[in-house]
Amino acid sequence: LHQNMQQLLEYDLLQPEQLDCVCALFGTFKPFDQRCKTLSIPTSSSLLDTRTALRWQIFQQLNTAQTVKNHQQRVQMLETALNDARQLQRYDPALYQRTTDPIRLALGRAYADWGLFEQLNDLAPTYFQRAMEFLNIRGAFQSLALERRRLYDLSRYQMFTGNYYLNKGALADAARAYNQGLAYANELLQKAASDRVLSQKYRDDLTSDLYNLQGLVFLYQGRADAALEALEKALEDATEGIYRYYFGHAALLAGNKIQAFLEYGNIRTDEELGSA
Image 1 (cartoon, one colour):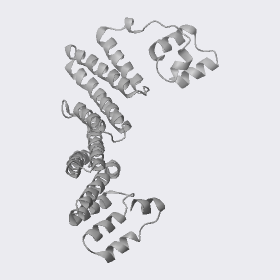
Image 2 (image 1 turned 45 degrees about the vertical axis):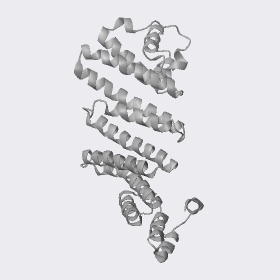
Image 3 (image 1 turned 30 degrees about the vertical axis):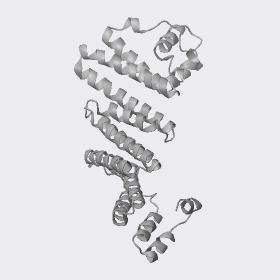
């Protein structure tokens, strides 16, 4: 729409009242804000019925929240949108469900981003937990696409939580978080079983990383056999990115120095050497 508007303006084919209409609807959105910032446009919601005006208000909040950098302000804006969406129950319960699912996804991402911003300090797991609570309030989503997104996000947020505990040395808590992340990921894979490309993406993004991290926990716990099993699963699921030197750690724990030496021989970069 913005590109079309720019072309029409270039050839003087857009009348002032037509520009007013576009700016009234989209003037607060990027990239329309630069073109519309000099115009003083009355609100367009007065032309809408109550239900549509409420939906439009929610849509604006969702869209604007994407550009808000402050994490607290972003969360507050999305929570306001969720409260506004609850009013839709009086008009259309099915519409309420369809409207709240994207808001809950957005709230989950907002809280997870806030947790990552805290860089593994003690506030981080609280925000990750809040992110998961919003995705689990009403259970599964109606739309298959959104339900896949919900499970994908839940798996990732469990991974983030596990990373926090692993960094703190709380290995049992880290293992529980990674296990729950794998449970969500495996449920997601069942819902994408007919799509090989999508299934491999989920394995690359989720299960391979989670098995790899699970193997790392087992290494720290001195459980060589369990670590090796988890690392083999990670290697099976991943197209790339699983370091063989983890297998060297497992072999060393098991007392197999020759196999450990061979696995460490697969180190190819300074980054891998430093990590190993």
